[in-house]
Image (cartoon, rainbow, N blue to C red; front, side, top):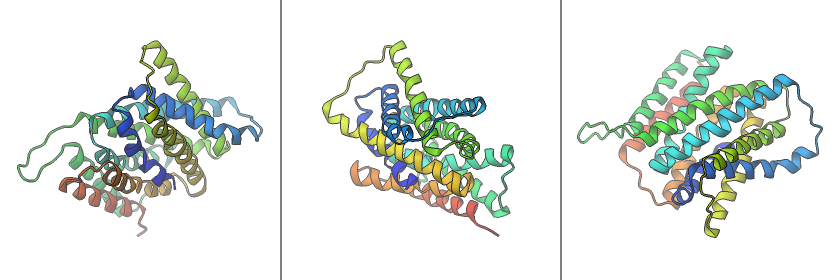
Amino acid sequence: MAAGFFGSVSTLAKPALEEINPILLTCMVYLISAAALTPSVLRQPLSFKRKDLMLIAGVAISGAVIAPLMYFHGLQITTASNTAVLSNTETVFTVVMAILFFKEKLSKIGYIGLVMVAIGAVIVTTNFEPSDFAFHLDVGNLLVIGSSLFWALDNNISKIITKKVNVLKIAQLKSAIGGGLLLAVVFVTHVPILLKASEIPFVLLLGVVGFGMSLYFFLKAVKIIGIVKTIVIFATSSVFGLFFAVSFLHETISMYQIIAIMVMISGVYLINKKG
């Protein structure tokens, strides 16, 4: 469910970014996400240790400030379909961090899967065209990959917090802190606060569904089945993203995107394969 909801983000955000500044859009979606989650959180007792608050602050800065800013700036430059495919790199970064710093383990074939996901990302990022064997570096794609790196850091820190703190509280605090910090940035940098009536439904759906509900179900999954299995299943968001981009934005999928998604999804399967 988290993958399906997050898969809608690139399609919902693409039209809005034609008029709305990426900083303002990121600020609004996280404040809306926080507001949507607050009623459920208020019913529960609020108690934290200082260490937990520090970890939540780290999650908010990496996952609700830096990552989405890079994501929306990248989406503004590149296509929604490219953005959907490149979201798979979050799997690689998350698993690599889990192995290096949290002693997670993969099967031997799982490492082949990691390489395959990375190869798929290279195909999309460089806009590789088999017809003339030319490589064209795309800054928008690189920003999307950068956002995946910071969301991977967020994922691994979240793994620690979900064992100690209620998932709803984490999601609400992360959204509130991230949205609050970005609101300060909006005022300090004098970002114009302009929003048309026709853009309001997109922004509300982004905040409530694309980020709020997606974040809640993702953290719930991390708590139940662990970060590696969660992120591997979450990689299917790229398939949802491609479907939404083609169906609603009428984007065309090129041959290199089809190759990339096949390579990356196969790699994701191998990462989760036992034996």
